[in-house]
Length: 224
Ligand code: C5P
Image 1 (tube, protein in one colour):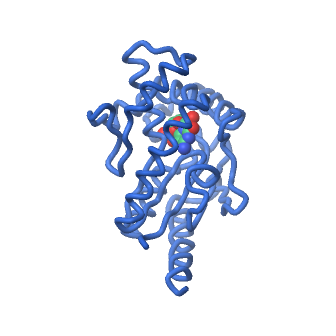
Image 2: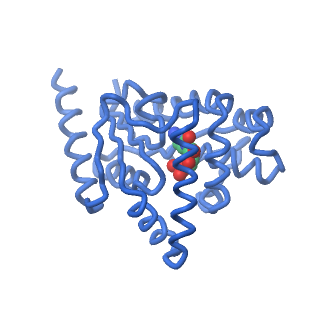
Image 3: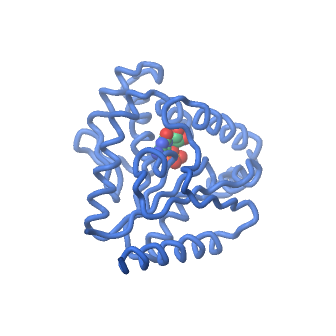
């Protein structure tokens, strides 16, 4: 038993994390951002001088990660969201995440967090490979997309970098390329995902749509 599990995937700037947070709030469940564990590995690697090509070194770091709805813990220490979202960490996170050894170690870490949250009432879990690899049995899978231009605009607005739109766009395109072209668990919609192109959709509209889909799914599973 337990609550609903919703997987939300999509590229950088697609609105995944704010959408996941709001959908979770409306459904009364928790939200889990899986990018946090990749970011945390990147952050610790930067701090400890481990190169992003040193798979063994990165795996060693990944083994000490724990993920919870509230955030991520490394070797027992909570890492702040602010540290995780520094721009240099975003770039290194997408480099760290191409290593299959790192992904292998972080897979059960993400599954454990999702399973605990599901048992406690349900969860919205967001990332790049949640519907395809981490939670292929999720009750609802959503893939959010939007044009590169729109995603760059949203990201720049969100981080107060409107004057550096070109730079933000370049960083997003680089990250997209690494995330979609990697061999291990590349970013792509699950065959049974609902794909939402949000280029011309407002935040409220996206949230409404996913919340309605979720209510319908949990209604039908509760009914038998
Ligand atoms: O979603 P967020 O921007 O926090 O993710 C940071 C990076 O972590 C992504 O660019 C991606 O390379 C990686 N990631 C991943 N699989 C996930 C979540 C994030 O590879 N499920």
